[in-house]
Image 1 (spheres, rainbow, N blue to C red):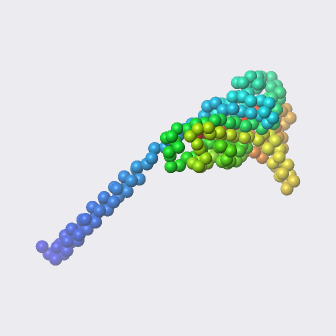
Image 2: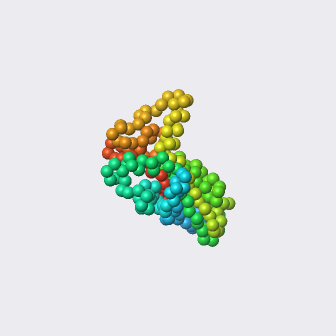
Image 3: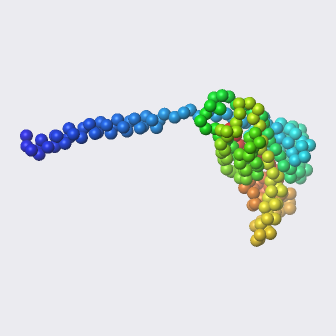
Length: 228
């Protein structure tokens, strides 16, 4: 055996334990990364209560959903798409609506290291509270909102409240603020034949809800996607 081959064998023997240690370390790290706690979810979908600005209307509301559907289901309004009912029921979009629900939660949820409220879609300008504590102010129906509720949530008697501002009056207010500071953003209003609402470009809400050339104006409000 030459000196070169002897040196090469010794180097291979010396490096072998390092290779085994490295392989063991990688597999251990992989095993640790793959172990995770199961995520516990608690749906808040279902029956809520909806109340208007002066509390003259109090109805059962379904989440996910919208206020026009809730009002129709409760018999407060008729079929929105019949005749000129879009004009007749235009008052709905001028109301502030508050959606609330009392919830009890299981111990399996409370024992989690982290607790978050996840609202996948809120329509649109709404303040969300849990047990009187403000979690967040929503102003975009296309955004998912997440809030930490670990120190707020109790086992029983929790009250979640989603207080929504009139989308029509909010858009008008934002338009007036813009005009006072600089210049208006056009278009201001849809064609009069549509019987729609103005200033939809000042609110992050589906534009067709303020009317479109193919559909009437129903500027709805509500929790339009799942909440958990």
